[in-house]
Image (cartoon, rainbow, N blue to C red):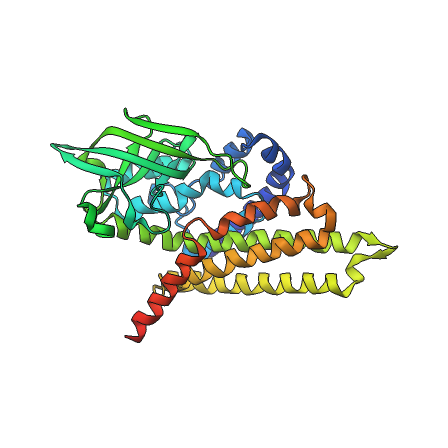
Length: 380
């Protein structure tokens, strides 16, 4: 899109987040749901498809534009991003990268409009950040595949229309090479979505188990080539890691603002606590972390866009920024003192919300493995 058009979109998102979503954070926390008014407004703004191609109704955002948007979106409760994150990210990108022309025409416009919500059904009880242990099976039967298995922690599963399901079509010994991806309607017979998970944080963002019992899916719903689902997942996850890193930067910026605002106003013994050097040190460390994370994300997104690094840098950005926002959240609670441990204070809520960033879309430990392997591969 044109640079001027994107800047207008970015400004509109920034104002919407601050004027509409931030004031609703406590409502979202209390009800564990995004209000319909916010969902409708987000859809009308095109947020359900900003990273999808323009020809299918999206904005066609580059990785850099995606990152800049994510920094604004990440300023508020992570549940807001989760509402449309799977459409733009890991689920939608599988269709963008490997979907047939017919699949793209059938699904992408509906995802871009927010008419459909897609979920990325990869994680299982014994296969999380490393999908090679995946056990869900898809067996060819004439013109169909029959899917049996179980998925866990599937974001938006409770209200999604489509599931991008990863299943093993190869032998159990085939590891990551025997996986395939399928588009499955949530209302297909044999698909059952379990109750919503009760999580530590990120209330308003729903996850659940999904069960598949003799689910019959037309062969036309196979995404890409049979047995190449792992590469599809990795391509989507790599770009998603840049996005998640940017969301961490957005949350860190909010936490720094909350910390500085509290330190500038709260008093102890008649003295504003921001005048205490120990508090100043906490603020300085958090601001430095924030600036480092922002610079890393923008550099990583630029490398993703020009194709020079779509593997190592996204993992490095996700690793650093997810750990970084945890440190910033911890310092924010410390700056607030006892008030930082009280429900209703943003620092307390974001402290719980931030913890998940070190786990999903690849744990910090997995990111380290990816980074090290890329370095060693380069050395060889």
